[in-house]
Image 1 (cartoon, helix red, strand yellow):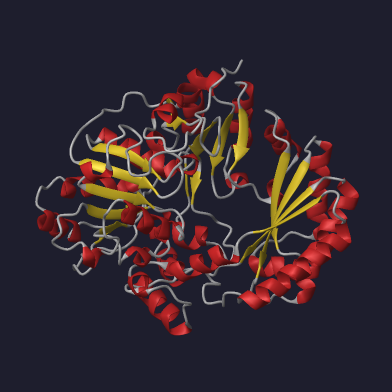
Image 2 (image 1 turned 90 degrees about the vertical axis):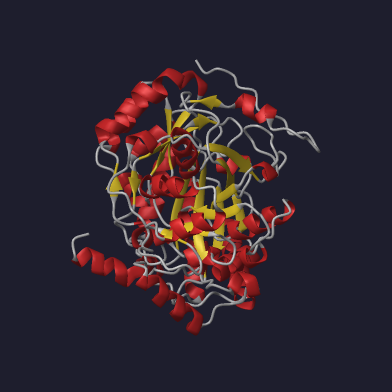
Length: 509
């Protein structure tokens, strides 16, 4: 039987995070408090998103275990310039780092520093007695140079490798001495200081100690879920996606260790949460997934997947998703036509997609969410009209209500399609209208919802993804071929990107 957990109700103008703190349930309750140095760890998003970031959990837990006086900060809904853990002001912390997962969080980080009275540009802080400002997180695997103008140091890669030497260097009390020490620390980028090793750090395995949630957050984006990381990296090599090219090599948590976390760590708390969220780029690629899911269901826990490819779906997986009340299934065809799906790396025919929709209907799902991109290389009007045709066929044959979500394709550094152009606003508007009309003609309005995610946000994401030193400071602009070429060459010298990955694979790395 599940225990009822009261969610915090934010009050306008509130001055404390206490109601949110009291709602948390700690899975790792042996973490030391206090310590040195005092360290503000920001997630540049709201509490609900930050508590759903397993990387943020890992860094916070690891720093606490190393005796660091680390405290959490979020951008809302509570007081953004006060610690989540103690309500102390940001001004009490000599070290501030942000865990940056997405490009647009760079702008959120900058705005937060401004609110705290801290100049966001590194050049404006020199000699001013300000805290040391650093960053790490998923963005550093793709383009750490987008943080160059803001940070005193940038941590490149996995915390299992980087955190211990980082803490050793930061325990110095002399500001300039710290930067000199950091500049000679592997996998730490210190702007304008020479460094011996600027490659992104990759651990050779997933540590079972760091693979799961540190706390349950009833007010988090995943609500009553706990998280378990099964895999990093991806073997699928979709041409638009960074997971293969920037986050390889492929590493997996052994099945017996995953089962141990479920039984020994999560088991005693199972009355406090409803589901275990399995974090992996593609759950179907994890050996022993079925056995793990069976063990979870046998303990009366629900299941969710961060990602499950269409070709991995079968009746067992859908029943597992619906076991604790899950009523919607998400599929990502990415494109409406088979031609364009094949060019992406998604070998899904229309028949396969419709078959999975029918399976979802038979297994009791009540809604289907479909994700597509606009502006893919080689995209033509007939590819967009095919989105409507596909949705119409799914609706006719399954009678499932559809939520169709469309995002502008953002070319990313290090991927095979990184050199592609970003769709311009006029073309985006015309193609969006074409998709909308095509879907409405094929489906009608009764069981169809169409969502277009913001063009402006996608444009900012593209600009920051390709930012070189000086671009944040000088104002963001649309990257041209010259800038993209210079960034690609710089990152490849640091061991990033498609060509660097090929070299490592040839060496057996």
